[in-house]
Amino acid sequence: MINQTFDIEKLNEIEDYLRYVPYDISPRELYNADSLYAGFDSEDATSVDDTFDAHVYQHFTKTGKRSFSTLESLARCLHDNAMQNALFTFLSDFKPKGNVGIMGGHGLLRTDPMFREIVLISKALTERGFLMVSGGGPGAMEATHLGAWLAGHPDKEVAAAIHRLRVAPSFRDTGWLESAMAVMRDYPQTRYKSLGIPTWLYGHEPATPFATHIAKFFDNSIREDVILTIAFGGIIYTPGSAGTMQEIFQDAVQNHYLSYDFASPMIFLGRQFWTEDMPIYPLLKHLSETGRYKNLLLTLTDDKDEVVKTLVNFKTSI
Image: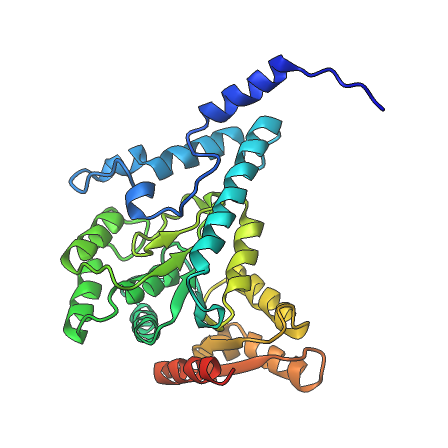
């Protein structure tokens, strides 16, 4: 047996550091707009820099996105482990095959017609009992949670909400967060839930406040895997760039190997984008037809009603 000296000073050093970090190392609940943006004043755009989320991101960048500090790495791991536990506790109230993910670019403008399409798809699915999941950031992700937030509201209110957000089309524009908060105040709801899963690795991209529940991680690899794993009801791919490409093939691998005992729909929204601009769909179709990839349930469409019908049929057929 090896004798080890119990280093009280080292333990005290660890305890002091864990008390110092600007985040709870063992959160028991998921975040939401109130907790992430605590300290935000809608009348002062600069106050976003004084929010809890901003303070954590500042600390994250200061200590290194890839930290070489054992103490900081420990703190982040403890946080992410607790966040994952809180996430799966939350998901225990939902049927797995009712979880649907929407993937797409963070740069999608609020003025883009695709933004509205995603809002309407997400709204329709939420009203049919699905839990909408995204990476929790701006662009296509924001549209996902805006749609879920507006579930149950009439079309004219949806149109008015989207119009109001046009004052700040990009998350880089002043007023992006303020306008979102204003829409939430004008069109309140407590009935419907949605799940955003952002990361401080991309902390320069603000988390959308429209997500009623937010699981924010330090480790992006955990975050990416969780999003694709829990979306048992299928994933809708909207136009995106490198991150979306990565998610497509990671999802395809899970379906190919039936990693979770069954394959889920992979729906590509935007025929021109997925066949010409970024011709991923023809490749996957070819690989599926030649047997290189198995168990791919592929759909290519421009029709939001077809998206909803495909996912509803999948959910009710199993």
